[in-house]
Length: 168
Image 1 (cartoon, rainbow, N blue to C red):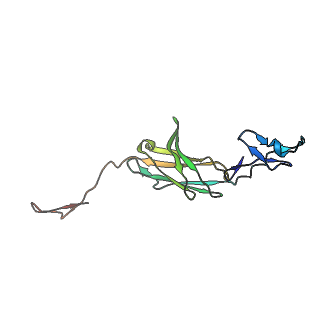
Image 2 (cartoon, rainbow, N blue to C red):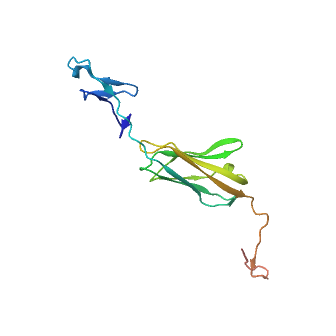
Image 3 (cartoon, one colour):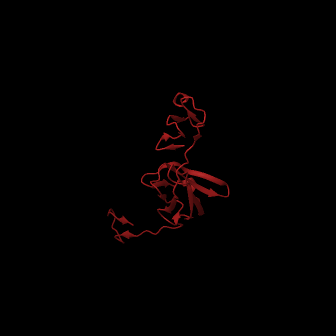
C-alpha cells in the first residue's frame, strides 16, 4: 500500500525493504546472513466515512430549461472525481464522467438528452481516495413539459402607426 504517495513495506531487523506493488522484497545484503527475517505488510490506515449531498439548481424544471446538479462531499479532504449518472428503465447513463472534486464540491450541467419529461433519477458516485470511503447518493428530479401558451402584453396598448411598442 502507499502512504502519501510512498510505497510502504516493513521488515523485522531490516529497514531496507521495498514494495513493488505485488510483493515485499528485502535487500539480502542488509541481513548479514540472517534467515529468520519476518517480512510484513503494514495495515492500510482506515478511511473515513464520506457523506455526499446531491442537489439540483432548479426543481422542478421544464424540458427546455437548463439546470445543473451540485455535489457536496464531506469527509477527510475528499479529492479526485465523481461520476454523475441518470438511472432509467433503459439502464444507467453517465452524463458527466470524471467531474473534478475541488474543495469537496463538483457540478454537472445536465445535457438535454438526459432530462426527458417526467421524474428522473440522478446519482452521483464517488470512488473514494486514500482517506475517504466510496459513496453514492441519488436525487429524484421532475421535468415538466414546456408551456403550451404564451401571454404577451403590449405598451402602449393602442399604438399609433410607426410608434415603437414594447412586448412583455
